[in-house]
Structures are given as C-alpha cells and as structure tokens.
Length: 128
Image (cartoon, rainbow, N blue to C red; front, side):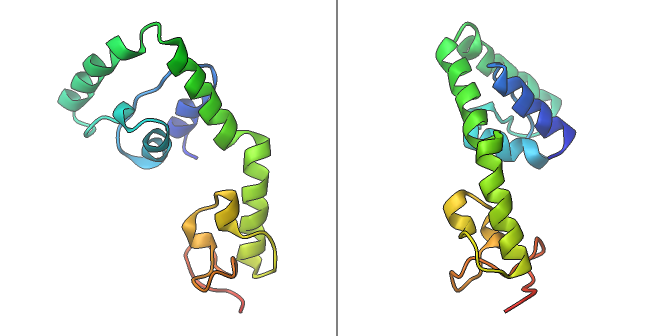
C-alpha cells in the first residue's frame, strides 16, 4: 500500500471520510468504500468539483463516519488481513491451503483451474 492509500485507510479508521484521485491504491480503496469519493481525474477542476459535491454530504454525517470505520475494520484489521496473506503464501508456493478467492485475496492468487494456488504476483505459475 502506498503512502497516499495508507492515509485514506488511516483517516477512515478514525471515522473521517477521505476523497482521492483515481490513481494507485487510493482508487482501489475508495472504489470499494464509496466510488463517489473518487474524483473523476487528478485535474484541479475535477478535484475542486469533487470536493464541493462531497462536503455537504460529509459534514456531520455520523452514519458515514461509522461506515468508514467498519469498512477499514472489515478489510484492513489483522483479523481480516492474516487469512488473505496465508492464502497468498500457500498459493504462491504452490502448496495446498485455503482458496484465496474464499478469503478475499486478489484474483491472480487463484489458479485458473480453481485449485487456488501456484501463481505468483506476476501471474506466472511456479509449481504444478
């Protein structure tokens, strides 16, 4: 996770909705949390427009603050991350283990035949 994306997670766990550009890890986080918090582009005009559109919706919205915290707890807490990491380690090593698709790991971690393993981050099968 890059620093900007980490800031989005840090702000969200504190209950502060974050907005961001559709670049890097920020877009992956915000797309899943609420795509309306992604600016259309990194241009100054789109950032200004996005801020003006979101401010009225965010100000004093306790339900949104709670949803931000819950989102981060469900996706980025140790309880959520460890099973995904274990599945990725097994899959990368080509060893039997949890199916990465069942624990929310990225799609590349699952073998095309559904066996759930054997592929590295670059999608190349290392073991059969």
